[in-house]
Length: 63
Image (cartoon, rainbow, N blue to C red; front, side, top):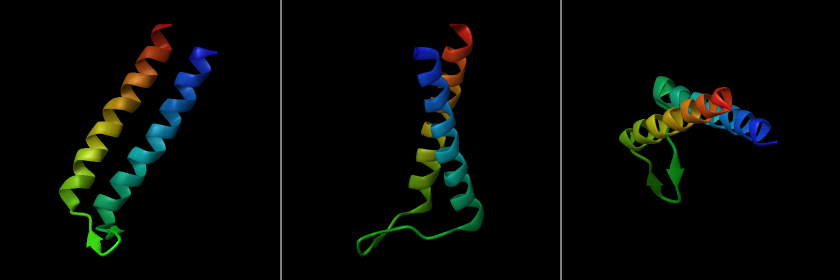
């Protein structure tokens, strides 16, 4: 069961990573209320989700 959860979590994080990459590529603005989210925040979240994605798949393969 943990293996399936890691794979599903990795897929979910991979989708989020791809959405972050798409935002960087298209320069799509993201607003939180009246505040626009700076692009550097997207870069940080993209790196974090990418690392988490790799971690999930590596731990799934090791088990």
